[in-house]
Image (cartoon, rainbow, N blue to C red):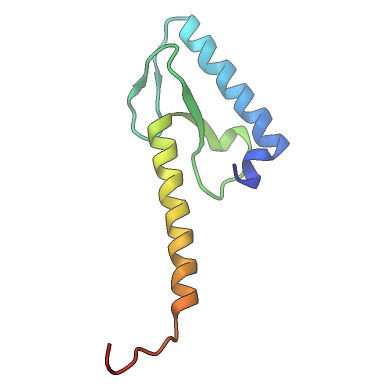
Length: 99
């Protein structure tokens, strides 16, 4: 879990979004994943996702999201960061003539 997910504001935001989703389901309304637009079936585990990566932790930047979409997106971001670090460590290495 990243630092922004431990932030008290984000934790409060997720509680509000989850309550809103439960209320919508109780009223018989459909709840859509903001990333894909697919309906999240009632009672299905879901994540609360950041709409914009650097948009902050307030309710303006949060929405219900299917777990697969949220975790897939987060994994891609993590991989990008890891690969950039690897490239930074290997930049400037000289390839020997026999390689």
